[in-house]
Amino acid sequence: MGYLPEKKREKGIYRVTIIGSIVNLLLVIAKFIAGILGRSAAMTADAVHSLSDFISDIIVIVFVKISGKPKDEDHKYGHGKYETLATLMIGLILLVVGVMIAYNGIYDIIAVIKGAVLESPGMIAFWAALISIAFKEVLYRYTVIQGKKLKSDVVIANAWHHRSDAFSSIGTALGIGGAVFFGQQWTVLDPIAAVIVSVFIIKTAMRLMKPAVDELMERSLPEETENEIKDIANSFEGVSGLHNLCTRKIGNCCAIEFHIRMDGGIALENAHQKITKIEKALREKYGSNTHVMIHMEPI
Image 1 (cartoon, one colour):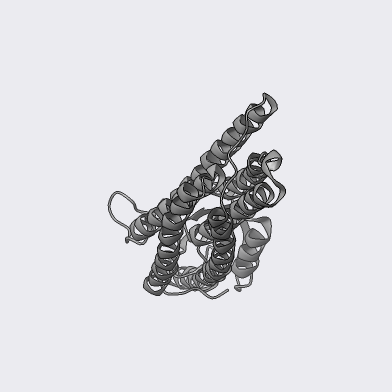
Image 2 (tube, rainbow, N blue to C red; image 1 turned 60 degrees about the horizontal axis):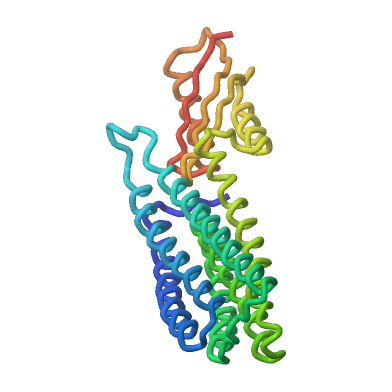
């Protein structure tokens, strides 16, 4: 797997995030106007969702800048986990927004059951929802492609935030469309669609939060990755008995520590040269910023 230089990667993350933030800001303004003029609570809620998307873009820009800082006396493993923290925050924002949309939708449904009559939304809200779906789906596809290219979990997380916003707008369009085209008695479709969409939003939030929490809790790298590390180290002549392997992620980087056994009779300089070659091979595989710590034990 190839790794981009850190500066180039950081610039790429900024570029894709700034593009997303501009689109999100325009959609927030358009949705709020459409929600007010179109008398649509669903569209106003959708605007709030887009606002959370815009806030998440700002979080990405700020935290990626921090995570790209070099190691210092207070952060000897670097600042990579700020990026993980940003991913977790995006997931939390999604979770809160999803719960709020569900609460408001259920509240309106109960009100209709009790005899309340919801106001029918206008066509401007319906067209705003369709436009939002198109823009957010395109933005999702662009962002997720760039996130994979840049190998950035936080950019991919942000891409799913764009996709969840598109899902929200689909629900909004169905609800508004049903209320507009089927008459006053079907205005309850608006909150029903909002509740259904909120389930997808909450599910997406949980999927984003889990790997971020795992990383903050120092979960080991996947088993197949650890097996690759063992194969690389054991491929060097004179190296055996790899044990006490400890791995974890630090933002976009990896930390790898293990013990190996080598002939106790060879010169210290020769042993050091071999260890240096192993470290180089691991960094070529997992990135130049990979933290590698190898402890030698004599046979």
